[in-house]
Length: 126
Image (cartoon, rainbow, N blue to C red; front, top):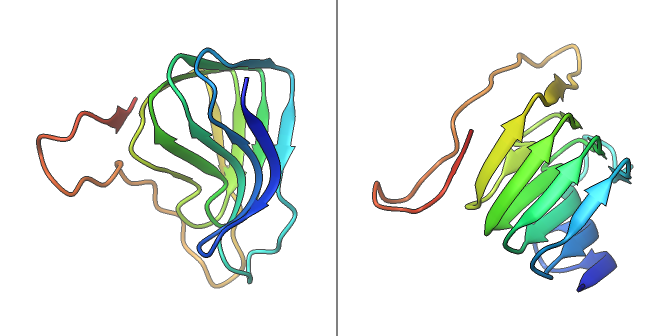
């Protein structure tokens, strides 16, 4: 399967990226240690269909998990972040997952729905 490590592009510092359909991970921690004061630092970018993450941990601050596109399934995972820490345009199910908002003393925590640019988009997080 296609996996890239330590990828840098003009928008993000990305620790790992999945592009191969049918990727499965169990018990793996994806961590980007860039601080919350830096630019977006993605722990995992997933741009593949039929991916499964079971009992994995996604640790980061700004933009931790980039569920870019495809059909994705997360079960019993822990996801840590500060700003927009789960984002993208995938169709993703998060079953029995824990979301942990890291915050500094000047922040408030708000969980919002996945953003869409048009109502007909075939994406969403559950």
